[in-house]
Image (tube, rainbow, N blue to C red; front, side, top):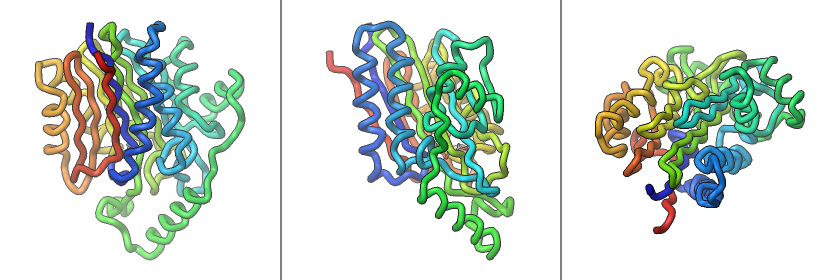
Length: 287
Ligand code: ASP
């Protein structure tokens, strides 16, 4: 028997003072993780993600960033250690993309994107309800202003550039030794309509298998290029402690790009982020 554990984050760069959000997500998730019902790890990471998607401080669901054209598209994924994956990319007009990812998991597909994902969600009874917020509108205005003025942040220089990311995610280990991961994002602040980051891509933004579960946040293109979650997972599979596995990836992640990671293995868990900046939470069941 393994002790159940759940970890959650509110995005690389999200202020550590906002860790009450991910911590509350862990509290909600832990109830599902320990209720003795089947699929505990999966249900835990779904409900933890919903808490964070509903928290306007974090860039996912309510609070998601706008695209440069003023539209709002989101990405989300769920994966389990028994090989189930459900993912949506560039989905619109839903408050909780993670709930749609859960429905995709039970469909014949692994990933639905764009209009197809949105239609699938509404057809399956998810409300047509775009999560627009004033905060995201202001972020877009400021991004457009930076583009116009050329006063770009270091990571925005290849748009010159992009920045202001943020994502939410959770990993869980259930008492039966199974794992699950969830991840949901509004992407970065400077992105074209149709852009898909690392978050909904298995192996890049998330990874889950018999050795554990990993969730990444940060500069999506760089995370994809490095298959960062897969690399952390492989280190864990080779016997490295998840804390060391996360720290190693953070250490080799090329500046100025940033990354945050949470991971659980059979016996342990760990989390690390560039400059240690990432709102985060962790909760382990008591014996
Ligand atoms: N990785 C996300 C993306 O690129 C953003 C983030 O995690 O901060 O879409």
